[in-house]
Image 1 (cartoon, one colour):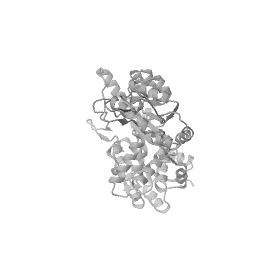
Image 2: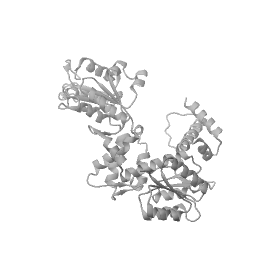
Image 3: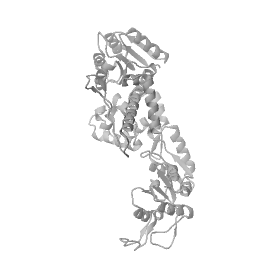
Image 4: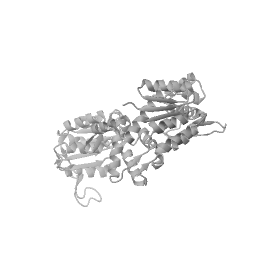
Length: 464
């Protein structure tokens, strides 16, 4: 069944163009040049989505939105605005509009925005398509995903886990490397044996050596009794070495001997002891680059990298966002049913999640802990999610985008180079906000398209 969309604009040409584009996508389109008539139609027939201009003669978009919200709070509303009226659009979003599109715009942008809005609506109200998506979500040893690449990794784990082979997990912080390690252990046939994890970057070298290999009494000051190392404590189970790239070259050599000879020598001892644990290592940095820079032993790298598993960051698998959001809401609020407003959900879906799944999980836990209402609105989200560029009055009295750069200096550079880099950062910011529309970005920057291209070329040379 096709989606029903109402379009409202008192400019006939714009109305016709939007109607033609939506009809080509096989939506059921109802066009109105009168906002009052559109409200009456909506009251009787409803709609899945409404697209409305903000500035109209008989009734402006803000009043129109109020009229729609008096009938229903669920229908998605997209507003179209001129640059000078963006403040009205931001006000309308606080009133419950889903999003706004700024003139002039390309139809491709509107098409994409319509699809996204309808997808969010399906998530909020439920649909057969959504139920089918939920059916494809897999929970593998606590790892939630419906992503194709992730499911291929699940299959690889099932095949590799029963072997004794060392596995190297690579991925950004927060992608769930320890969860993957535990999944390998659970499918290895060693699941009745211990699973021992240690963060190699959290301890200084002498203490880490003692933790890994143990020490004998009197081995050093403070060694008042014998200590069993983690390799020995793991027995025939699994030892998980997180942040393996932080090992010193001295400890790398000792770990290499463990992998080659399957034996350890406790600190201060002259005897070696056999170990049977399986090693899984993990890193969030490129060990290949460290090998090239002589900071990591090449022979150890090849010993660890027999079966490499690269875990993709959350931003590369957006199809996993909604399943994970649902999963964490159920985990942290099993007895309370939360509803998410369209704007709040859109904010969660559009955020890049640099901290990956760990950041998403802690965010949902915070929301469920602090939100007292059943409906989650943008105001219930953490401040870092709600931060976005806003339009303010400049000294010249014009409205322009407010932009604040956060610099982290590693070295002193000439002022001219700094100014060029700062200019480039702001240009990329504007390009991002205009969805890489060079023409529109150039307009907002107050330069022509050729000047913009030359600036981007100079920036690339600076980076190189």
